[in-house]
Image 1: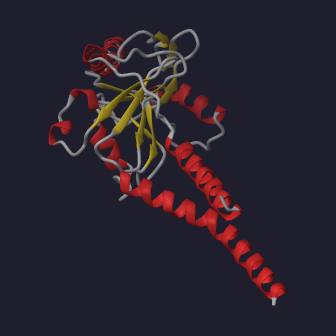
Image 2: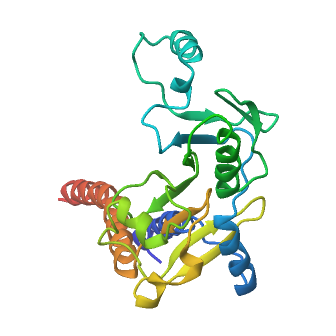
Amino acid sequence: MRPVTYLMLALLIICSSCSKQYQALFEKRTVLADSTVQKNVANIVNYRIKSQDILQIRNLQNSKSLIDLNPLQSANATSSAGFPNGTPVSDTYQVEDDGTVALTDLGHVQVAGLTRMQAEKYIESLYKKDLKNPVIELKIINLKVTLFGETKTQTSLPLTKDRVTLVEILGEAGGLTEKADEKHVEIIRGSPEPTVIVVDLSDIKSITDPKTILQSGDIVYVPQNKRAIRNDKISNLSSILQPGLLIFSSVLLIVTLLRR
């Protein structure tokens, strides 16, 4: 074989290697059994509050925050947080290491191990002793899903409802790009041994499929379609070969001139 042929072959191998490395992201997978999927779906609504979770707690019967229910405590909380008097204080509370949240007039309330609804009803029952017909709303606002791949926005998005579907979260991210492979969208779930749920969004049944309901910590990965992969390979090949071909052409020109 001529040296030029060897050069071309080497460049092709390098190009193929680069493209394969890019596509290997999340390539290895463990199939998630249907029974496991059903179990996980049931656990979404029944997420148990744990330490370091951030809760938003409001009394819907009163426009004031829970902190404002006690004027003295409200003033202390405002000044200690560095806000000027009269500035609203956020109704967010971080669950402490002992599993409690510190609430006005109640002190430290144990919420770790409870579901969102259980904690909501429990806090509401405690406030009924001092407040008239309280309606407590509790949200866990730190639960998130991360998006990678061919989505218009690659980011982490909060799970604002008990049941957020794959289609809803992709809509919040702006949808899929033209390079997306909508037939092989992956939901990567769990640790330390993640499992993968593959969803075919070209099938309208996927909209109501229970396995597309997301959990906190899920990673949604949208791979490239075959056409995009092929175009990337051609682009990579062109970018790698062009400098080499330029050098080869220059050398060939010099050799040709020297032989005259």
